[in-house]
Length: 410
Ligand SMILES: Cc1cc2nc3c(=O)[nH]c(=O)nc-3n(C[C@H](O)[C@H](O)[C@H](O)COP(=O)(O)O)c2cc1C
Image (tube, rainbow, N blue to C red; front, top):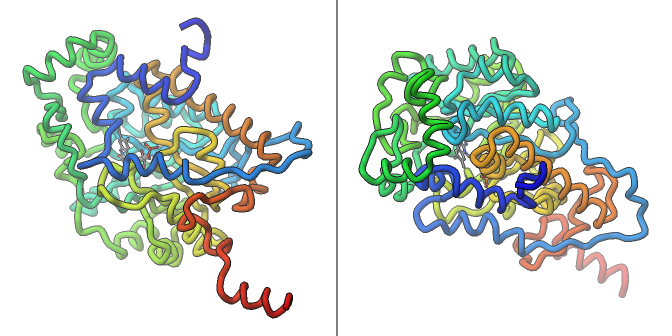
């Protein structure tokens, strides 16, 4: 590692470094998708079907990637998505991730299933903190969690609605990757082959707080979490429905965001129910295989709610150009999940900082080469769609328009 770039010139470099540092079972838990990983691949390839149409001779010397979300100004159009595993990839990785977000001037979302307690993240990292909620079967426990988030100063509550059942991730079972960690010959070897992780993360937890645990869970429930394949927490409910959202709206006084929608009618209904924002997401291709990519429905959801609510999107973003494409399709900001996890896994705080720096540079470069000075200037006119299905509804030639043009011109 010759310089402060950590030998990483893009997010894929950080991914390679992460792969070398952490046990394969843990890496795959973070990196992979579900079943045949069709959606995981489509989340990436969808960006290849959208091209840029730049403008030239525009003075871009004062370009500015700042955005305002929920009245707060941020240094770039990114938010760190909730991921329950930052604290497994690095000792207290959530604190490192939240610090990197604060330094970069963007919000950080702490997951319900994180390994570090929400109060500690707030005390030690600060910044613009959002809290993600997986609703539990016992709604009163979820309400207590939300009360804690309020007391700890979290500014937004992100209710995840696409996790009512865990995805089918066969590799986790094959890798014996469970929480709390149960030792099998396969994963013992996996851990032994990664001594930096074994001593720097696992051993550090063992000598301080013991085996990593879901520190936001109530104590009695925490003790009951025995080895089940990761992500299959018995605490998730499959009865989540609209009244739950209403109930959360009643008790949460700050911004309420619904995460995991891909349907314009659902998104509009969420806003009618009082949501301030919606995250268009397929959970990074981790839950339902064969599901559409958020980018494929972003334009119609932007048409439905873009003027009434804050529109966020995630799943598959690895480049600044991906972010610029999504903003051109109507998103107000992009959430990134694995990108900063790779950074955390490889180098802790420094790696997350580097991941965000890469995005900042790439977004700025793309803005310059597109002839854009402010994020608000971006729109579908900067894009060309190799796949007509991706074209935003208002940019498609409708019959009415074509008839009108004919009437006027002929
Ligand atoms: C390892 C991992 C853990 C995740 N845990 C959660 C979670 O606890 N809650 C949640 O709402 N989303 C979770 N997600 C989904 C992310 O919030 C986000 O939707 C997804 O990672 C975006 O895709 P990307 O990783 O391609 O950026 C997780 C994703 C990953 C990769």
